[in-house]
Picture 1 (cartoon, rainbow, N blue to C red):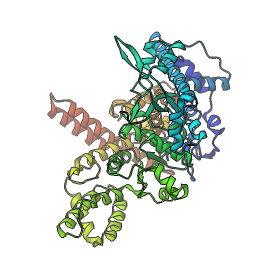
Picture 2: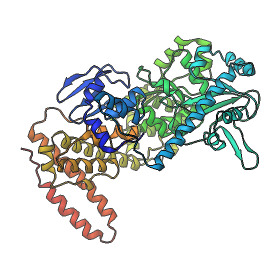
Picture 3: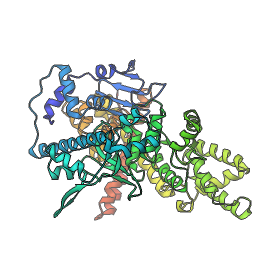
Length: 592
C-alpha cells in the first residue's frame, strides 16, 4: 500500500511516540525526553531514548532508531503500510484508497505473487517430508538428531521427484514465469521449466518478517552439488539475509552466534541457543554485519574448527569490527562444528565455551603463531615482529596496552620491549598483507582517512542535534556561517537541507525528516543524526564555544571539497579558502 505524504504526516502528527513505545517499554522522564531499557537488545542500564519533541527514538547501545512508524515495523514485524494502518486506527483516522503509481502497483503485485509462490512451495515440501515419499528425508533428519518440534519450527521439508513442485504450483494457478521468478525452476526456451530442487531435504529461508524468501536444499546420497540454494530474486538477496534471524532477533541474551550452515543453526536452536544465525551459502559480508549491528554489538563466531573455518573467521573479524561489533571466537576443539560438539559434550559444556569465547585479536595472534616455530630464534623474532605490527593497528590506546601486556606475558617477552616495538610500528605505514589474519584496512593512511571522516560525521551530527534541540536560538546564530551544502553529501546533507527548510518555514517536524527514509538502516542513522549525545549541563558560554568549534571544523572540510572540485582556478580557491578560515577564527557564536 502507498499513501500520499500528507496522509502519512497526518497519522504521524496524531501518533504520540511516547504512547506507542510506552506500551512495550517502561519509560521514565529524563530531561526533555524519556529513557528505558531497549526492546531490541538485552541491557541492564537504560540506553534507549524517546524524544517527544522530535517524535523519534534512538538507542545509544545497539543503534536502533527511527520514527513512530519504524518502531512498529521493527518491534511488531510490520510493513510500512501495515504500520500506517495500525497507527491510523489508533488515532481514528480513515485512510483513503491506495494511492500508487501503475509502475509501483505492478512491482508490488509481482513481489506479493512471488512470496505467495514460495509460501505454497514451502507448504508442499513440508507435507512431502511427512508423507511416505519423504521417508529418506525424514530418516536423514532423524539421523541428525532433530526432534519433530524443531523440524516444524524451521518448516523443514523434502523435494522428491522431478517436476513435482512445478506441477503442483501450476495446478495452484501460477504461471511458468511466476514460478521461474521465485527461483524454483530452471527455464529453457525449448523444454520449458523444470524443478531446481529434487531428491533434497529442504530448508526454507525466511526474512526477519517470517516470509519465505528462498530455499536451501541438501542432496540425498552422493549427488552434486551437496548444497543448492535459491538464486537471487526480487525477494531474495543472500548478502542481505541471515538464516535463523527471524528467530534469533527475538533473543535477549545480548549477543548473537554466527555459524557456517543451516544444520549448525538448527542444532543450536534445538539445544536452546536461539541466538544462532548463519550466512546463506556465501562468505560473510559487510551487509551481514550491518544487519547484526541492528541487534547487538557482540557476536560470537562458531565456525568449523578446520583450516577453512579458521580462514572464514579471520575474514569475518575485520568486517564485524568495521561495523562496530566486538567479535569473539567460540573454540570447538576437538570437535569440528557445533552439532558434533553438543552431541558429544552437551548443552552446558557449549555454554561454557560461549562464556569463555576468545577475543578476536588474541585469536588472530594465536593463528599467526601457528605458522612459526618458536623454538627457532629467527622464527620467534619474525613472529614477535608481526605481533607488534598487528598490535600497532589497534587504535584505542588502553586496549592496545592491555593486549600488549597480556600477550607479552603469554609469550614470555619483556612487556617494555614489546611496547617499544609496537610504538615503533605505529610511526610507519604498514602493509597489512604482511600480517596474516590482520585487518585488511590496517594501512596507516587509510586508518587516518577513516578517523578524519568519522570525526567530521560526528561534528555534523552534533551540530544538527544542537540546532534541532534549540532551533529558535541556535539556528539564527549559525545561519550566517553554515549552509546545507557545507555538510557531507548523502544523508547528512539531506537532513540538513530539510531541517533548515522546516525551520525557515516555521514548521519544524524532525520525525517527518526521519520518515523521509524508508530503509531501516537509513532510519537508524537519521535518528542518530538528530539524537547525538550532547554534553549535559553546558553553560551558554561553553555551548557557544562548542558551536564555534563545530562550524569551523565543518566549514574547513567543506572548503577542502570545493577546492578539490574547482580544478580550473585552484589558486583563487585557495586564497578564498584562507580568507574564509581567517574570518571564522575571529568569530564567536552567540546564542544569548
